[in-house]
Amino acid sequence: MKRLLLVVAAATMLAACSSTPESDSGAAVEDRTPGAGSGAGSGTSTQPITTTTIPGDPLKDPSSPLAKRSVYFDFDRDDIKEEYRPVLEAHARYLAQNQGKKMLIQGNADDRGSREYNIGLGQRRADAVKRTLVLMGAAEVQIESVSLGEEKPRCTEQTEECWAQNRRADLLYSGEF
Image 1 (cartoon, rainbow, N blue to C red):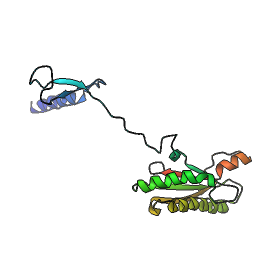
Image 2 (cartoon, rainbow, N blue to C red):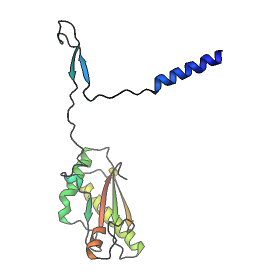
Image 3 (cartoon, one colour):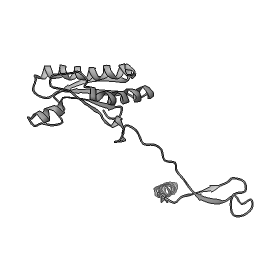
Image 4 (cartoon, helix red, strand yellow):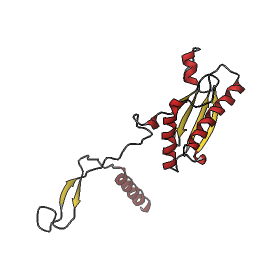
């Protein structure tokens, strides 16, 4: 008999836990400020919940310079082109203002050199971007640079336009790598 009562009690508890509340987008809250409400001293007026808009993440805003995450290089070169300085300045400023953020720079090369050469070239490219960011104000401890060589191409055709897409350094923030 005790066993039957335990089973019934357990089943009742499980049944009570299995229901899910319905959500209502027009939820209201009770205003308990003195004098609020329809009757004097009732204090039970309902008002809709209002939310404030939180500004979006600048890293995900397509109109932000922080949305630009690749620096492209000329053939067999690792020097930063002048056109990428404003983008790198924005990233350096962001890192300086957000000391908890980390960045990984992945250096890439096209597939025309040997595997070993492309690993070295990708590392020089990643290091050049890191050095530039540090000189612009980012903390060195926030940035790691690695080479992927030719292992992560954006394009696989054997054309100059395609190779140009693969000669790059990609900037990734924590949570993206």
